[in-house]
Length: 566
Image (cartoon, rainbow, N blue to C red; front, side, top):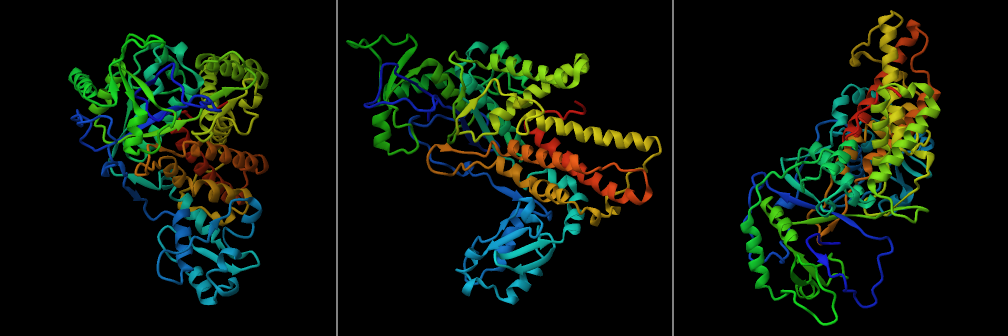
């Protein structure tokens, strides 16, 4: 629903009502606040009036330093083709497929060039300007050529390897950072779930989306406050198993006067009535204190973004406490990030979150026993199975755009390390990297390999494998922008519903793991202990360091610890 503050009348149905084809939706409320606005905020004269989006709703970002960036490069390339006053046209795009990257890194298609240049032919002086680009955030260019496909650009790849792999720490941070703004994430399903048995799969999805969104926002430098508190011990322990760190108590003290003030406003509101006995109507719950006719109010106020099926809503004492709590946390404006429902394929009886967790844990244990045998009985495997289970569930819930429906196949075997699109597959490749560096270190201690030299002394021109450029250009280089994309919230947009790229990090990790696995299976990174092979080995190890650091940072936004072995 668009608003989490009310409960719909159980007997009311709009004319020609049809249930939503995808089932019930869950929502996360986002409340932007200022740095000093986390204390009690005075109530507005009318709590049902839409508060306009204020300056606090926009999150100013500061761009990163001089590191290479895809957005910076595309912007500079577009500007180089600009002929008329005004903003440059967006004609360039980054290549990503292995086939196309063999000949080019960026392409301006011929169809996009025709409106800018006669016959789509770019003048030589402009091509020379493109080649000589020297802008912050833009890697050095190797070539710029006019082809039948359009204008192509290829980077100086050894220079790009050197610049990126010599400053890996810069590429594990977001490309933009927020200037100490604060935001409240109100996970509405937790307000109505008083025990673990009531927690549905759709509820679980909303919780995991909120948890991940909070972490990527913190990584941007924002102060994030999670509400409501979770007093139920069963829910707390369950969330702890999934590595969700939720507050146990509120940061502010509840002020009963706020509820009294809200009741006073409702008693004077023309759209609210005190419920009484109605002939032919089902008796209302004892805790209902007001009926609010939202349909009339929304029509008069011409508000956008609300569910058109909303009409008579029932206000309870608990809902007023929720509203008072949020206003104590400096409510200025609210946006709702709606999560689509989670359904189970071929499962008539409902499956709750606890049953889903236990099933996935058993499946992960059985898959590990089949692959590793008696080793799984070791005590260390208890933690490994726990991490793999949490990873499997998080990737199932977060790899799909939050507004889309998820259909779970509880018999799906792809949750094991064999499935290339599962969280377990990502964790498996994370462990492979740990094993790689552990093997190298053991060889150093045995005298087979020399110690690792400074990154500035490495010869990155020896990285000529197709898969090596894929890992750098498609994953390490754009990773800061992936983090920023996951935290972009269009808070100034009209209406109360917004979307966010909460699936970006999981999809990024899956694609990175697939490309790394393909490369790792094909290339022997730790070769024979021969001096003439060491230079290439060190360059490859530094690339693997970059892959490892990026995976670890991305997993941290999911509260998943990197595994050192499987």
